[in-house]
Image (cartoon, rainbow, N blue to C red):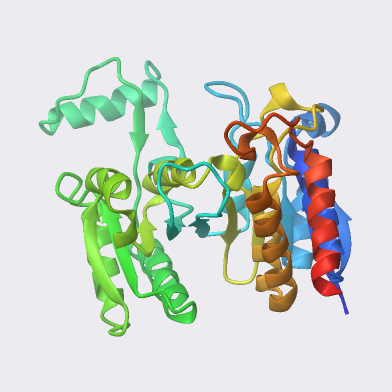
Length: 362
């Protein structure tokens, strides 16, 4: 059987890490019919948009995609292609597992936490109004007339959190916990201050939790969570978060498990899934073949589990873990302290993982 899967190489180091993931996936013996789709900055120049409709059509057709990072300008230019893909395809859940690998330099050992982030709502949805525009002024005037202290020269962001959106992400989190034999879901919010948005999210999640009596649930404020993750990460299992909090806490956990080079993820909807490393495109490292490919490879492991190839997923995961633990053929960020050997390039590390896959199969 051959699986049709969309692959989006991306920008910057994206093509390098997706190529590494691709050869590692193929080394397991799983047959994949790759549908290569370009998106991002280069496509913007050629086709007038960083996200052509053909890319979305490919994902809708194949149901599964492996995507490299795509450049998002900071403070100017086009909106995030990553966000656009999630919204256009209604990929409402972002799943990011964080797990300690032996051999990785980390401040805390034995972390095994899954972040489940709502993907379409909240401040991260990007509903904003520029300071000084007529519609912004009218909105500010409305707020001021209703007793809100808002400066007349403010830019405005709106934070929508809906009942329906909160229900589906909460149900997804508890279903995931039950299916994967997880014991606890922590509902993360700031409902003590934002009572009508985060409060709604919290109340909906608590109601959903009642349908899963075998899964422990708790609520925790997002600022307290940030502190507790540094002091007592073993207390947490599955984290359920609104959009922006999920993005920030994801990077905190990446820092506790070896950096973004070790952080895989998937954006998933009812029948579509786009797997991708959490890290950015790092344009300054483009073409240098230096970036850790583990996040892209682990995203591929998640993809194999999604399509039902669990044994192949276990095989690739084991091979990667063994190569990292040995520390002989790894990129600069994974080299053991004091090691004087030259770090492996992205491609060389991927080839070492492929070789280990073949050895484990024989």
